[in-house]
Length: 113
Image 1 (spheres, rainbow, N blue to C red):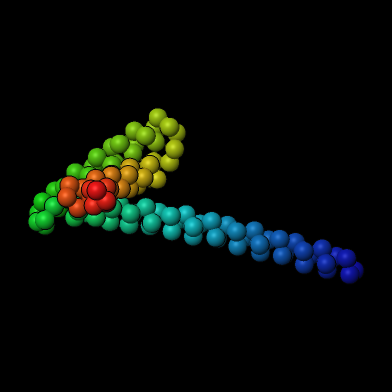
Image 2: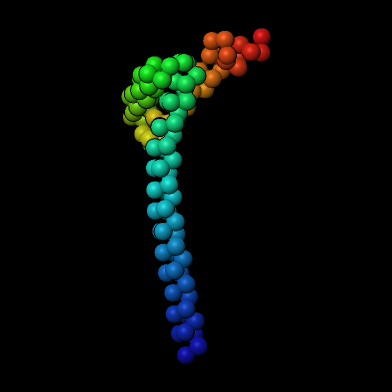
């Protein structure tokens, strides 16, 4: 009788740990989507703020960078068989890094000279 109780307890423990893993994966998946969404809201705007001085110009440049990142990221995800959301955010981040490094008169590369 002691073995059956231990077996039942082990089964319940395995079931609980499996349920916790499933719950953790669903939460991580939701969090990942939120992070990608926030990245696509912030990254084009930050890039545009490095390139422009006026709000309306920044809004136009930000929209253009976002659209370009989306189209380019979707093409990259299709041809390289990678996740589309991550490819879009990585494209926007690459544009930000290029602007940050090579920005005229204020870029990191030009300040070191």
